[in-house]
Length: 70
Image (cartoon, rainbow, N blue to C red; front, side, top):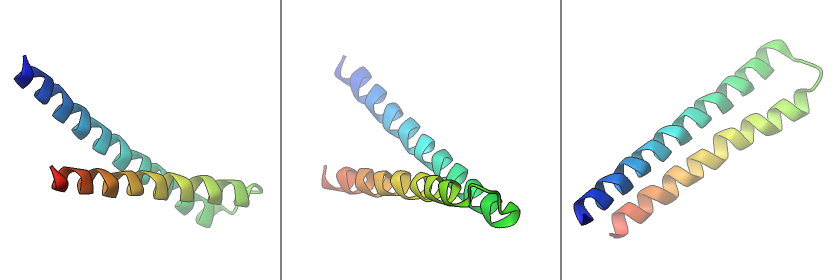
């Protein structure tokens, strides 16, 4: 049972890392679209794109530091 729990935790961690990477790509896409198209809501898209780029990156670094301490 412990092996199954460890497997599920590791798969969940891998899934979260993948989700964070996808969110980072979405943030980059928003920033690139914002730079290319210059829409009227430039400040809103810049803030959202930057947050979508920074938050998942921070979580990936935090998770990698937690994995090294175990």
